[in-house]
Length: 219
Ligand code: B16
Ligand code: MG
Image 1 (cartoon, rainbow, N blue to C red):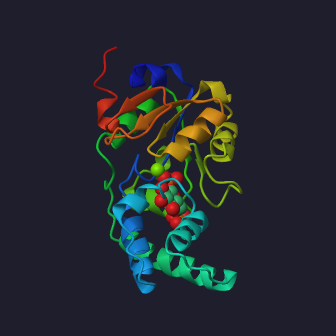
Image 2 (tube, helix red, strand yellow; image 1 turned 45 degrees about the vertical axis):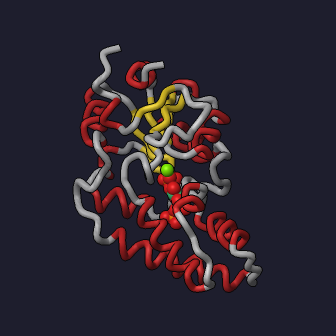
């Protein structure tokens, strides 16, 4: 089905952050790679793909599993904290307007057409990123990694976002770039538009290469 039609039919639009609005995946990759290097694990983009939409703690546990490393909980906290420090150094370089193609045009269109706009991200750094890139004020609700106890594919993050903007899940559409996020949206009984250039995702209602493709449609 056409992505613009799905959005026009919805009352609220819930955005994932990393990979949909901003290209921070590359920063996550660089920071995890630096960490993995410390214990001689060759972390590649193939593994990085599997961490998209996955929380920081769950990502670290996966990397330690792939590297066959068994370490105490306290040390894990230190590793996650180092990774986040390196990641934030990269985020600090971001400037206003550092968003993915079509982001501002779509956000303006949603405002003009009276949609509720929410964020549903696994990231605990979401607010900082929205502020750095200058798009925070578009959002009626922000639900991030600090506000949820269960990671995607659990629907908690999207259900909370819908509740905050006062819209029934069936009237919400989620824009996602990760399979875990698509599963979370479906479990929440929402429609989902996949933002997926590589054509690796499944089970969505519509797919676009980037947000810029959505408004071109005249369905
Ligand atoms: P942080 P999203 C996710 O963001 C990223 O895709 C994932 O790679 C990252 O591990 C997760 O946020 C947690 O991020 O370390 O900043 O709390 O795609 O759900 O917006
Ligand atoms: Mg994402």
